[in-house]
Image (cartoon, rainbow, N blue to C red; front, top):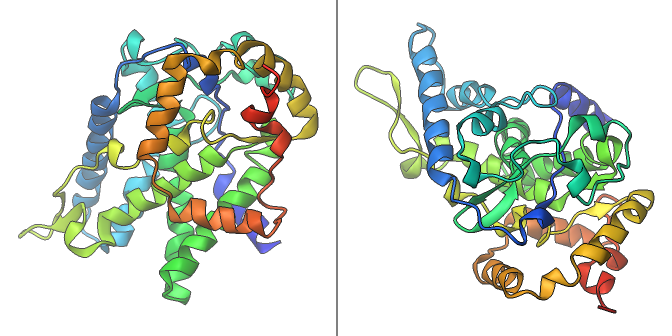
Length: 318
């Protein structure tokens, strides 16, 4: 009950859209990493300017929390980083060109009636890894929630592993409820990986000693000494065709025909095979993935899985 109350408190204003990464299987988008990096650096420096204009001294962790607030998601289509990207990316950097493409997607028969009105998050590419823009909101905004929980746990018990587990547990509950099953009937393991990478992003402002992004200068002002780069955090596990979601049974019935009819054959094409092979070569398992896998091995209710929903099983007759 306590964790559910925390979830509702932290997530009240945030709402994450679904995305359809299958739509990129026959596409090659331009890399968006430099623009994302520019956005992150710009927003961080804006936050630091505001912080340094105040007379009250802040700890490095307090400064990080202030920075993180600039990336706070609010409601549908009001997620700062996604809004900025849609205004600043070139047409060849994202697809589709609008969120209103649900008729083309695997979600063309929506599980929740309101999803048709909300639309879906377009896809982008960073260093040949394809994922939905919504993952960047998970990275910056839900990652902020992870960081808050991580900090609180570290104050009570200075165990890095237990603090990270507490943050991941929050993410699991979020997918089981507010921003997963309750919102869309989807439990996204890719979202969970993006959340965790966001935690690492915020930890790197102050937590890693000589590798921190921040320090105080001679005038006791906080400055950015190293700009974060999104490619240090993006993972193939953000691509939901590589790290598949779990769908509630009634939702899976709506999605299954589209996958069978449109993607079983396409998965044999060289472009798709090469992308998946590249993902396999560069993927490195995170602590979050390892922890979630350990829960799966215990048949945990918080990590749903159905072998019948795997692409290999769906396409075995094709």
